[in-house]
Length: 469
Image (spheres, rainbow, N blue to C red):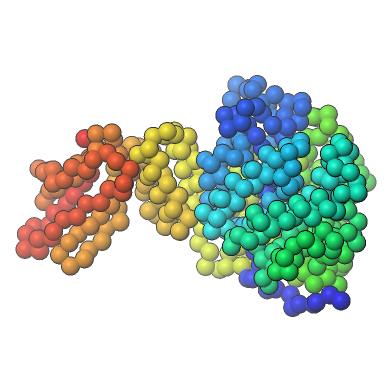
């Protein structure tokens, strides 16, 4: 018997971005991975604008990247934080050394390191299609399919479920399955039997609830596009969403998805027929599906997807759409979840500016430690301070910040650009005409630069500035 719960109010819902951790690219990896090439495109070829040839109609603002690149991961989790996204759902294929599954697993681990740093939750969407492919390749016999899946989820329990950042519902880990593709409904209880009682998952499957699942999640219904010259009409989409929610009335929980468009490149890459197209409609598809997900009785809102370039359902910034879709999320969060949410489109550029500085000053320890501080400031919501430090780094000058006054002692931090010869702190009683006297010399080191001075309340006001030596 299903346990029926009261619908969540919109303010209690989490926004979770479905994330593909499967990209490999130089220089992190030795070669371009399949998801950028699909065996057809050559990213080493660039056009006059420096745009690489990739398996997508859309182009990441950063250019094609490796999902293990810490600079990219930092940028992505900060964008999520600034957009009002609560966490990620990582598409996970297990950890077997077959095809690119092992690489995806390693990149999933790296992603979760960064979601923890940013204070985001995370969970897995397990792809059981992996079992069929391994059986087809002779890697495992079909008689061991359930056993292999059980061991795979034991690894998920060991590596992910026990982490305090893993998404849980009423104390149990949340797990999605993109299918089932291989297993039948009655096999899932046997697969979960290897998990600890406290880690029996709150399990969601695609489109329909199966045995062992509490409910399901929806997805762009591209299978319905064949009836309209390969284009999914808004009327067909509406009918699908209505039908999904009607089925969900009998489920304990369900996940409602929001998506901006669907425009795959499979036919052009020669890897199969296209699944069809759902037009972007200047963002109206995303606004409509996000509104619906936030106002129905779903438990979570799944944002489909953060970065599936092959299918075109990308929410992270691209050359084509810029930050638009993240701005839509900000507006929706403010309207439905948190009226006090203050992040704006301008705040999103902080992550982009940090990304650019990471590339510019790579391998320079003095700069990198200051950029680490910028990450912490953005994560903690101290955006004005982060902006000042970014500006100082961009123009390569030091900046005084973090002023505190305790009794008769003044203290402030010296941040921004720090030259290899160190810094001078200068003082004057007239900031316009000077003269300026050097009152301290701070060495070039990666420790946080702090200056303290006694306050002479009987004397004239004093002004301080920092200069590179």
